[in-house]
Image 1 (cartoon, rainbow, N blue to C red):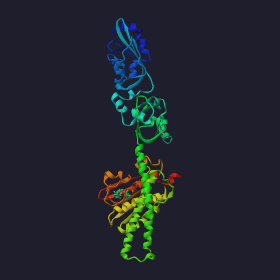
Image 2: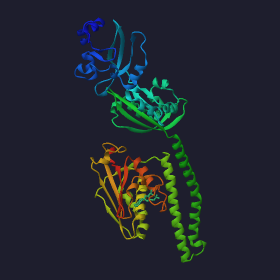
Image 3: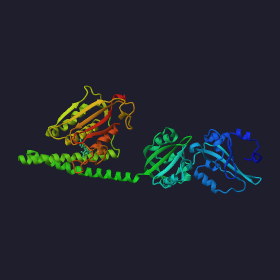
Image 4: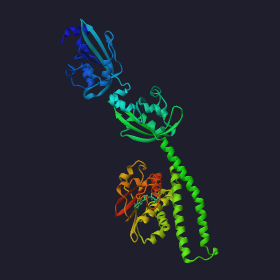
Length: 486
Ligand code: ADP
């Protein structure tokens, strides 16, 4: 390197070494011939030697370098500001960069200076051009939030919200969310460093023209070298939710309509069985009993349909009170005693001598026992047994760390097992969904367990199933203890 020529441009190399900002000088081919210690430090290198001989354009990400390459310098000087540079191991560093082209004695030199900035990253810091295209044209709306500001949105996000990129970049992202969801979202946006894993919410978005959209929102934290950027993925599910609401309303209306004629049939049958309408033969009495049993079954199905749609539309509220589980269990077994006796089933109860009270809605809890025991009885072969046990669970039990469960609260666990055909493993989770049945031609309409799950979840509990095919099925649920709430 001709140091004399270099000194002709900037005198005092010592002075450059002392500067706080990173400085480099490159020859006309773009190879770095000098870099000061601040630049090496800034890029994460131990010394300046590794930089000498490198092309200065390599300090920029490919998209940025392409952009720089395209812009033809006008005259002697060119400035690039608010850019990023690539440090050791391709670390992206936001920086204000100035590059000057100078020709002295017919030799051209490039002089560059870098000052790190904490200004907002640009989308190009976060992704290369391929990922950028994938994001730009994704089916879901995508936006990136940095320090409470939207720094990137794709086309679908603009379409969904009705706002343009420009409008979104200078508005508070919380404003896009309906007030009822705002608190959770605000917390995530203002404290992004607390988001360690992707989170998933169902939120209502308010569009620019005031429309409400039900959306699934997934927030994924990504780390830049200095802070957390939140990538938000938005999927419009309002059509799906509308269809579900229509289905729920339809089921509720039809079920109510079916109830009236059914009540009339039941009433007529009671009159028939009364001796005042004439004495019936034994055979007639038997037929009447079968009809009455079937009407009751139909009634139970309709009640379940109405109940499931009420729960889905959020119309059910709990009347919480201290409840003795054993009492509710006995009541349920009593109402099912006819079926238990008919199948000659043995009921094994294993309950602690003094079971603590739970905080529950008594009628709803009865419904939980009725539905679970009804299944156990239905699927257990004649002359076998069903078992019911309950115990206070260990505060360290993994189930108590799940989402819906109340923290720092004691819980009781109830198990109901039968020796029926079992449930195939692939059905164990699905079985709690509405209208799910292992055998689509089997009895029932598949609402009992969906109702059980809704009731248990409303109590901040959890219900799950275990099964060994051909051997047994066991349903377990947990409920909070009454003491924990005092
Ligand atoms: P339904 O209200 O029609 O009885 P459920 O929601 O209670 O429906 O149950 C759904 C399905 O789960 C049943 O159709 C059956 O396939 C399966 N199932 C529930 N309980 C048991 C059990 N104890 N043993 C075997 N299969 C069961």
